[in-house]
Amino acid sequence: MKIAIISLIIVIGIFIFVIESVRRGILETKYSIIWILTCLGIGILSANSSLINKIADVLNVYYAPSILFLFGMLFLIIVVFDLTRRISKMNQQLVTLTQEYAILKQKYEEKGQHQQ
Image (tube, rainbow, N blue to C red; front, side, top):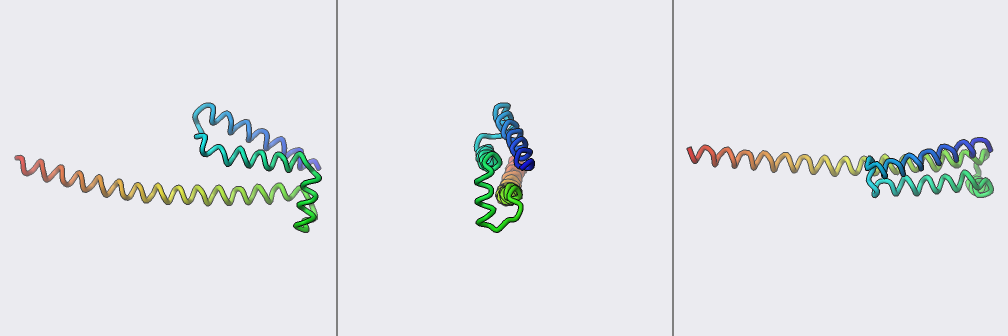
């Protein structure tokens, strides 16, 4: 189960990095929660080989530690989807803001021409 030990070390490193990023203000708390929960989940799986073996038996997985990578990939898919959703929302807000700015700029210029 060397892969589980390596995974646990990596998870602890990521956990420390996330906590330090929040402490320094690089990462907002609301975004760190999903990372912290994932670190805890994968950390529990890494530290508890019997739990990994039970999950592997249920899913008919031959090499039990590969379950960690399965959960890691599922997490990454969720994060990518969430980021894509946020980018789409921000893009819509940017289009709206740009349109409102153009309208206000046009009104301002029209006012300036009428006063002259």
